[in-house]
Image (tube, rainbow, N blue to C red; front, side, top):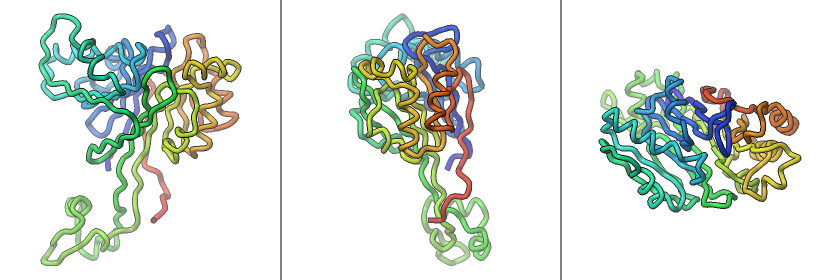
Length: 309
């Protein structure tokens, strides 16, 4: 289980940049690794205003290929090359990813100094990356579009009294967690011998662009954080739904039904210089709601008082 999981919002607006908000991009730091969800134009400069390094990005997950979600990729990749990056970069996205990004990332005269691996996802997959998984869901949008769910894997809770009986220090306990059983002082010890329940991993869901639909409720169920688009206020939601978008009110209804801990609203239309109305409408349904601002950082903490199931 990671010691630190941190979110940084590089862009929280939709459609086009405004003086108030850049377009969509979210960094998720898992210890020293950085995952990037969407990469709207200007993402790399926004990153430079934070302490999250673009050179540490391991994986990029694109929700769809409308410009406000991916046009920052070419510049970001070229800057990585100019800084002599060697580590491979993985980019995941919906159908069309290989064709679109192969063409887009070849723009301009520059030499790539690191390998880029492109992966197309249909929706419904669960990608296993060791300590965490990324699940995907096809959303309701006019072009192929995905929602992503980051889920840290559950780990056994250690009962200190039981561990002390075997004289196990932290390094040995970590080995026991990974291997399930070890031989210590001539005796076989199984993880069940020192368990005190399960510590549930943190769960973060990002909707991408979508009209509201019931599958999102199941996808986001019991999430620590649901990051959901909230393009407009409720008076404009019918038109927004026609174009594959949601209102703040509708996002709050999903959060309530999914029983998430916190709702963060993004993809705010540039028509709103002040998004207080959107937050107010959502809070009436789901009180633990915030409209996120550019460059805002959030530490995602392990839940306290978890059950010992």
